Image (cartoon, rainbow, N blue to C red):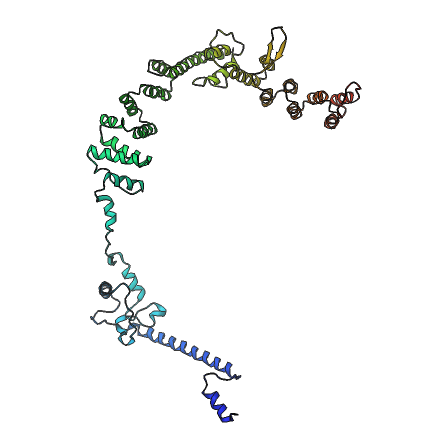
Length: 486
């Protein structure tokens, strides 16, 4: 059934949707104009409020709004309301109960920060004044925090709290039984920091006799105390502890270490001599005896060399000898007194025999000293030995590869290096060392012995053209008596 034209117009006029018209843009523009007018009206209200700045506003109590007394009363009233109200107060949405005079703020304060009763900035300045500042009541700390200090913790609970890094007081443990329980629980906890903390407390509050007696049956705590005393360098108390425990050897070693704090050499020598009567073990006593003998010898050598240096018989020394180690002393003697007779204190052989230095240690030290002085004849004499038939050969307690390294570090000439590179047993290693140090004759002779023609041809291109090495390679390549492998 077809609708009439009147019905269609009624439908479109009564519907919430409207048909598209070109006048829609005009409607949007009109709404924009209305919004602009609303903003202008607010601006006029603000200007009117500015004109009312001179009007003083009075609260219900009769006090000027914005004054200090009014702000104090308002703060107290708000605190009372806060105490009575729950944690989440209801928001009153009834606009009829809102009284403009109670707020004390005008619409202009929203834009310019001012109140009707006066300048808002002056009001805030008065509140921030130190003489008029309002302080909130300080809240008490929770009881759990006071509990850490005042609760009557047992020794076991105290150790557990110490393990968790919580604050505890050990002063309440006054009886010997409580202190020992505290120590036993700390040892059972296997916490070294707690054990040390408890031992420090016991060391401060117990007599030495009682502490040492109780620690005899607690070896773990005893080891911690010994370690703590060593770290804190409380040597006097540590000596008393060793003496009380009957550990005479430990006491003697602790006494021996006191020589480190003596600067004068003669006083140190005398102190070491007095230590020889201490109850050392046989092995330790031998070491202390060697130390005393070495320092005594160093003092004699130093005095003799100083006198020879003043007389011009000895060059100016560049290395010290006093309080040096045994190997350094041997190096010093090999450097300055290598050719002296064995019956003198400064003779290297005398030092070797007195202190029973091994052949390898003596050989390495003498090689380094003579190589530094570039005394290659002395170096060669170290390796030369005779067999029972009277023939000489070179022998070394070190590998010749290490000998070559020592000589190379001391800038030995190629001819010297070549003599010892040739003594390396392994052919490949010998060739590598010879190429590294440019010992061409060693490389050529090794390839000749290996009968490796191709390697010899390749090495011919690495030597200098027209050199004696190139001519030697050519002679070997044309030699018909050599049976080359390839």
